[in-house]
Image (cartoon, rainbow, N blue to C red; front, side, top):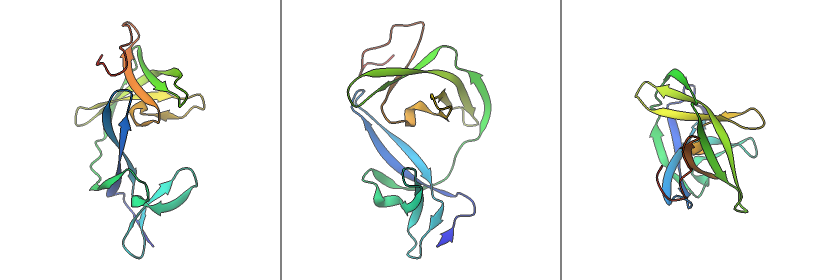
Length: 142
């Protein structure tokens, strides 16, 4: 195994949001390469290294070009909505927005266990909306 000293590559994974009829991608850092030169990522459920292409939604590798966070803004009343497998809906408050050096903004929510994440990369994410407005119906833009 060859460790990746600096994360230069990420594995991309395609996700389909049926509620909004949209597709989005998430990434995982390549942390090592096996002896056959296959990219390895951490399987978060088992805590073990696995082949990056072992997931059915694997969309390929790409060179890491992550923009850097240059500022953080307050969440300002935004809400992230999720849907459970049984169809029930729950929400988390967007506590902040990270501002990247390329101009992109990413919402940040904190779950009940205190873990911060970008809700658009979480399982069951449906949409973002502002608390001053009526939430749009699933599949409609805000």
